[in-house]
Length: 308
Image 1 (cartoon, rainbow, N blue to C red):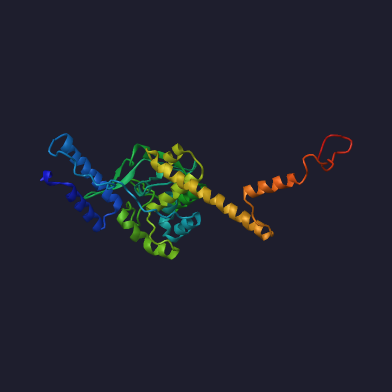
Image 2 (image 1 turned 180 degrees about the vertical axis):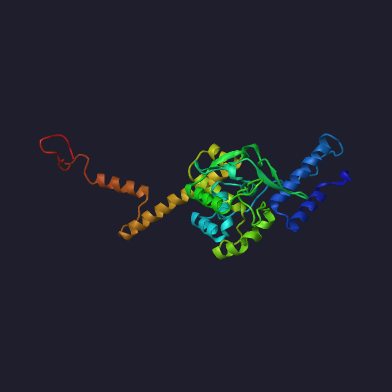
């Protein structure tokens, strides 16, 4: 009975989800859904006097930090997968695409002349129906993304080697020309083996989009521009990537400081802090008495008063 649901029961249900291996993010989403349903029972149907979903922090998601590849690692990964999927790896990374968006691209979505890709569909998997074309995840998902020249060349080579087939003329397909289901991709590519050989075991395909977002944020674009490229309606994700980029920039500055101090140490000088340098300047000025004679000023010959 709905009236039998109380906070201890909700706590037990949540603990069971986590103990069975359900991720903390998925558990938080399930908790929020249950809370919304029970809130209707409280406010609209008057079945419950109070919402039993009152667990502090149970609605918050704390996803684990995902790995970010270097440019070199992305290129190594693209070269390591079967050639049919090389451009897919590059396109997903450097256009910041979701998996469903990448595998739904059609030949007509690629503009090699201007170096852009248009995202207007995404594949979703419907139980009992298989792969189904649908609009992107949000209205912001309808977008056109500029791609680097080396990705454009990879797409040109892909189109020549693996020409799209009718009727959908999909850009990326399996060996038989059909759309690539997410569950089949790892086996088609030999994903786990490839990652292990490259030393990046545990990488998810979605981490390619994550890597591309980090690259985009590090270019210094505005939040709005980053949102448009990622296909997000909300600023939240874009700000997270920009914050990460800012932290990376601070790390670069710190690295420069370390290299400067090492250079001073190699020259036989102890590195000085700004305060120490200011103190040294004041000490040098103080060597000349205020009322005493100062060293003669050097002047340019023929132009009295103009000191060097």
